[in-house]
Length: 405
Image 1 (tube, rainbow, N blue to C red):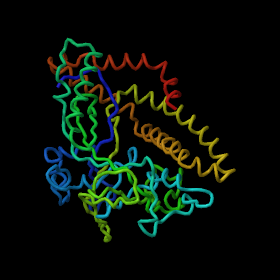
Image 2 (cartoon, rainbow, N blue to C red; image 1 turned 30 degrees about the vertical axis):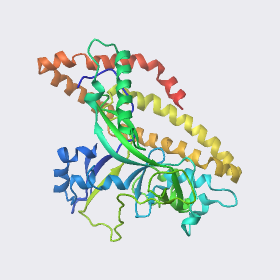
Image 3 (cartoon, one colour; image 1 turned 60 degrees about the vertical axis):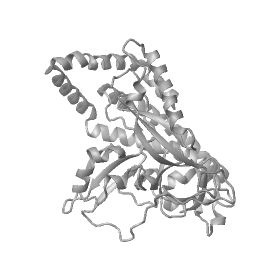
Image 4 (tube, rainbow, N blue to C red; image 1 turned 45 degrees about the horizontal axis):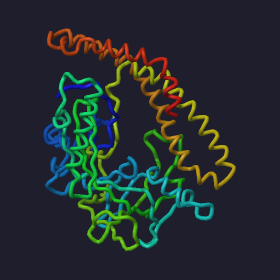
């Protein structure tokens, strides 16, 4: 497939990482990377089974049978949730349900502080605008996205043709059904995948612990491990009498998911295979060294400083008035989450000499390039062009960071 000068942030996707807790070894050995479930059979399943996995690739992702992907959901705008009962019960993080908990809270019924538990399905609380989305299938559409494109086109013409191809592919996937679809680029536009979803809009709050448990440690412990927090909340997905998505209605019934997870009360033992599966969003693992340097020295320090000021202002007024505290609780937590993460990124990248590592990788790339004439013809000048573009962007980096905030 051709590579075109087009970049886009990867969308929410179903990916996977696996961890092996090796008996007799203190440190955790993890297989790095985010793996596409539909490609497990081809690339990953053998190594996972050698590490102790007792599932097949079809047990994890399949379009022919119920599988793990049918028990995992996109909760709201990007969190991961898990179906844990045959009656639509859903488990997600406390911080993922935080906005819903806050919207139901008041000074008189302060569910943020005190927690909330529905004693029956009739007591479960509806949440306008909250959605739960299931991935029904995914498909590579790289060749289809390339149709009608040739080397004579300029970038704008390429973009228009790809947008046309995308609309046609999505239209074909969503005809005669109630599904939705998105197409996202992988590897900076070198591959494209289509994700077809089923979205439910009747999602009700079932329970959440007090904030002292669900957010134990607050900003101090956020993005730190090990953590000792009860970071969970529970919801239930509802459907119509045909078990299909429907707007909120008191007559809706608990959704019967294709698959749900069973909680193993016995826990785990050292040496057990452990797997993480969900919707992590995107990665910037392949950034150029100048981009990492700019992030460390310019954009992240600016954004941290701006958010520090915002948090100080919100905190002052929230402490003075319980009404303001409840109204701004979710906003405050959203601002502080990335604020704390960025501080950790700076610490981690600096401690691990990330810029130097990137420079070494780029020198290895130059050596690999110069060892083959065909590679030189294909890739010569790539690093120099990166350097030129980042130099050109440099004067605007501060303004861009401030504008984005």
